[in-house]
Image 1: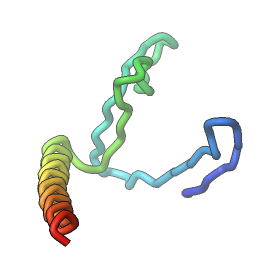
Image 2: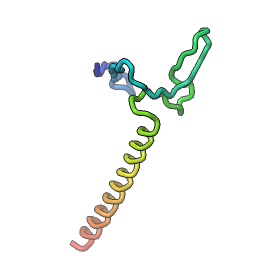
Image 3: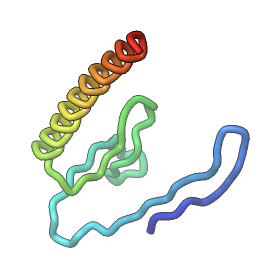
Image 4: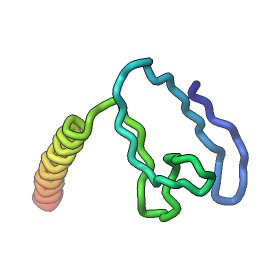
Length: 95
C-alpha cells in the first residue's frame, strides 16, 4: 500500500502511508528503541526526535555501502553544479 491521506492544516497537506511485505525467512535489520515496559520485549520508534527508526531488508554492511555511495554521488553532483554555476556566471559577465 502506498497512499496519501489528505488532512489539511496550516503546515500539513496530509500524511503518506506506506506498507510493504517482509518475506518469510528473510533476515532484516531493525534499528529502534527496545522496551520491556509491558513485560514483553518490543522494538519501537525511539522517543528522541533525532534518533531514527529503520527496518531494512539490507544488512548493515550493504546499507552502509549504499549510503556511502549516495554521499559520494552527491559530492560529485555538488562539484559539477558549482563548476557549471561558475562557468555560467563568467559567461554572464562577459556576454
